[in-house]
Structures are given as structure tokens and as C-alpha cells.
Image (cartoon, rainbow, N blue to C red):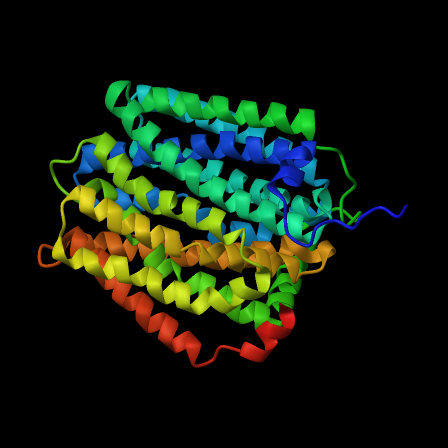
Length: 412
């Protein structure tokens, strides 16, 4: 009797039954919780020492600064070297760097030195993330299962931002920044062991190795590959421009009200990621064709709760509004999945690196702009968030005028 074909719909059961997919998801959770704890610890440390909303927002923006060039230049490492090896080296590097950061915080080192170490750690995160994203289609060759796994990965990312923000705020309040950073270093060791145990070793997608010349050539290939396809180009532009309103609540979370404790600030920081977690789980049950059709409507709707923040609601109401915005921001899952699936296997690292670089640049700029607006006496944090929502509506309206509906339908 002929074996039945796999279900056309993605299956959570098949994803979790796959040891490699399961190991990748758990390793992702371990390292990303630690990442968020480190960012929260640094943001609170900077806010306490400087009292500046802008400086605190910039501390969070450090996570995205390396991606401006690093993702585009280092993304090809996931093509040039075995992806499992790239992940293992990055985990070890981050464990050492964040461990050193924890020791220096205890010794009251200058903020500039602490920022430099955090920046170096974030650089190590870039090839790790690209290698993991590039592995999923090989680990899960059934495309519908890949889409489901990608949705789980995105939802897991958001949920670790939630847990890491709340845990980081609580630990800093109870034990101090140094302890939170030391625990972060441990999470990278856990991720390393999980990858060793569960992920198979595979040859590199491109056996020629790398060099400075090849990295630059890879960058040109990634840009050309992404920009030559109308569907991927406009979907990526939506992802980049969405940074203008995606991160506004996170930029002002700790400074939203002067009386906020670190724990409540962590809850506010976690509101949008919590919503995206729920929205991402719901989105995995929607066929990719329909996800692509919902891209612009969801992007527009996600701006409305941010716009409503202009009334300067109490923290619990602000958290609820930002949670709703997060649920609607699940369209970013479709952006990531579509660009990955539409890119040939041997060039995924390069294309995802370029796409990630643009998003990192837009996010870092948005953190700085929103942080600056929130620090203006005539504006403040609540109005800064609402202005971001209004900017988002203008951006989506502009993209709608150039949206290549036929190309995207063909891609679906």
C-alpha cells in the first residue's frame, strides 16, 4: 500500500517530534531569555545612573546596532561554514563576553566599556540567528511544517522577550544587574549543550570558505537577490518601515511613568512581545496565501492601539493597548517566512543577512527617535508612542500605492 502523503497543513506534532527542530527551539529559548535579561539589566543600569530616557532607549537599541552592517556582512557565514558549527562558536563567544560583562558591572566599570562588551556579544548573535533560520528548511523539508516551525520560532522569540523582560526586571530589583548578567552567560552554555546533543552536523552550503573579498561579494549578491524580486523587495520594505512603530512601546517602557518599579517596567516592556506571541500562534494556522493577503491590513490595524496611547493611560491600560498592538504585529512572521521560502537554499544566509541588516538599522534609529521624543517635556512617553502609531499609518498608506499584488499572488 502506498504511503499517505503528508498533510498539506503544518503540524505542531510533527515539528516537536523532530529531534533537531525540538533542539533548535529549546536552544533558542535558552539563549534569547538570557539576551533579553542582559538588555533589561543594562537599560535599568543606564537609567539609574543617568536619569535619561534617551540613554535608556539607546541601551536597548544596542541590541540592533550590530545588525546594521554585521547581519549583512556576517550572514553569509551561515552559507560558507557548517551552520551547526557557526551556532556553537557563537554560543561560546557570547558566554565568555557576557560573563566578563557581569564581572565588570560588579566592579563599577565605565558605561562605555560595558556598552562595548554588550555590543560585541550582540555581534555574535547575528550569525547564530542566521544559521538557525537557514537550518529550518533542511531540518523540516515539508514546507507546511517549516512554516509552522517558523511561526513557533517567531512566537518563541516574542515569548522569551516577555519572560526575559519580566525576569530581568525582577532580578535586577532583587539581586542586581551583575547577577542577571551572570545568569545570562549560563543560558548560552545551555544552548551550546542542546545544539551538541540534538542538531546534526551538515556540510556548508558553499564549500569554498570565506574571506573579506568573498564577504563583500556575498553582500552584493544578497542585495541583488533581494532587490531583483518585486515580491521579496516590497515585503522586506514593509518589514523595515514597520520598525517606525513596532518598537515604540519598548523604547519608553521603563520611563513611561517616573514612579514605575523595574518589575512594572519589565511588564510594560513585555506587553508587545506577549501580544506577538499570541498573534504568531494564531497566524501559524492561516495558509501562507492568506497571510500574504493580510499583510497590509494587519500592519495598519497594529498602529491603532499605539495611537490610542495619546490619552496617557495608567500602566495597566497601556500594557493592554500594547498587547493588542502586538497581536496584530504578527504580520512580521509572514514577512520572515515569505522572504526565506522565496530564496534559494544556497543564498538564504546572504539574503536574510541583508534583510536583517535593514531591519536592525531602522529599529536602532527608531529607538533613538522615540527615546528623544519621549524626553521632550512637551511630548513625553505616551505621546511619543502615539506619534509612532500615526507615522505607521502614513507608511502603510504609502506602501499600498506601490504594492505589487500580482507578484505577491504569484509568489503565494
